[in-house]
Amino acid sequence: MRTKLFLMLGLAALGAGAAMAEDMVLPVLAVSWPGKGGNLWRTEVFASNPGPLPVSLVIGPVLAGKPRVTTPCLPPIPFRHQLPPYSTQLLTSGELGFAIGCPDFAIGGLVFSADTEVSLVARVANIAGMSSTSNPNAAISGVGQQIPAIPTSQLAAPGTVYQIPGLMMDPNPCGAPRFESYLYIANPGPAKVDVTLQQTQDGKSAGSLMLSGRPVITPYTFTVPASGWQQYLVQMGGNGTGACAEPQVVDLFFTTTGNLAVVGTVVDRGSQEPRTVLPLATTQ
Image 1 (spheres, one colour):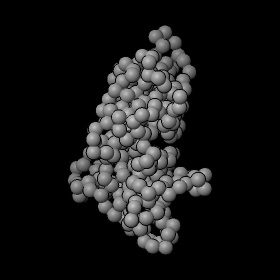
Image 2 (cartoon, rainbow, N blue to C red):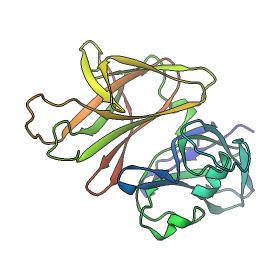
Image 3 (tube, rainbow, N blue to C red):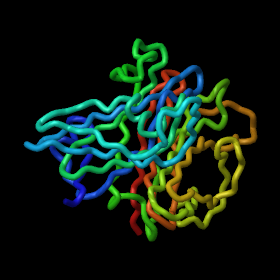
Image 4 (cartoon, rainbow, N blue to C red):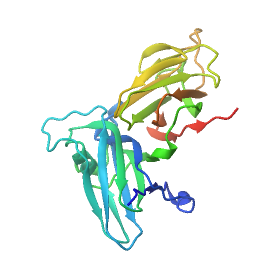
């Protein structure tokens, strides 16, 4: 039977969701991942079976990111989770971590598939200071964001310029940056993929960015390995005056030589609240 999956984010998506006969890629999987300012990020997934028969949900393969494993439980191989008929089950951060070898902490991507229709809702949350911090098998409580698992037919693909809208940059803050923007890129394919990041749709104007603290001139091309995953903190340089300035709304653009799952996150450093940013396919 063809794999059939779909993701519905929140109640608004319940009416608009469509079943997808394909695998799906979750571009951000966080397992007790330590962030700035004492933040601690975890991912959980709600898996629902709306049908009359049990469903075997395959969790994995994992798209390699940044794990730290002290005592591995198993190699990071796909494993199956059984969903009874007409039921919803919580795939906790602990169970998702089991799928990638029981790391002390990790961040990366994850692929899901099933033998019939299921619904997946993924959430990444900051659990620092919450009662669930000590129990990775508990439901997550804390400020968080919903990040879609992306059907393989809807991955960013060659031949299109994509827009990453509404990032927030704070190049000249008075003190610590008020907002920070991140890009997460997952490659579920068997071959490496080149990504060209640019600051205009046509890519004809040169610019400059900081990628995880490294200055680059745009358009800038980097490579995502096969079955790989990458994270970048994206910043703009200052205005050169030394004067404080308000945060700026910035759109970035990219092209790709292969199929990728791409998502952005803007973190409000005052509240530590994250906001999900999904790419748009541009038109000419």
